[in-house]
Image (cartoon, rainbow, N blue to C red; front, side, top):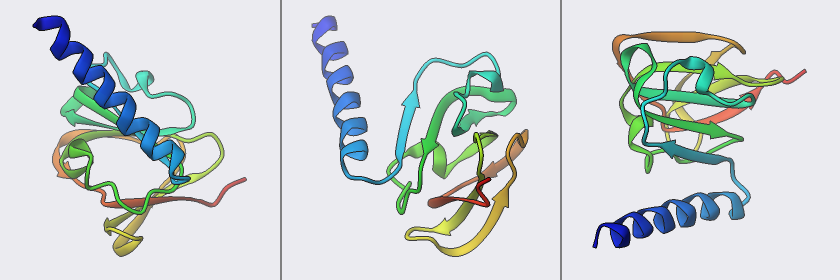
Length: 127
């Protein structure tokens, strides 16, 4: 029974990630284990953590994404790291690149008790 649940969870995660990649949009993923530090964010990705000080559940995004509302940590996070290789990260408060927005420069890190959210994103100012 335990193995069946683990297998179902793994298959579900693979199907979700594969669907995003196959759709031509950016990719988003989730990691259940609590990362030790911001350095756990892979190069080229924008990562968020549910807890302060890069703790709790981590989710990451690569590429442009018109709808991040299906990823719970993007709707309520307390730590972030912009580990993009050559672009800045532009976030939007609404799906489909609408609402208020802001740009987070490459290398920017933030952690604290303030709760943030992102509903869509683009990579901008690429060099």
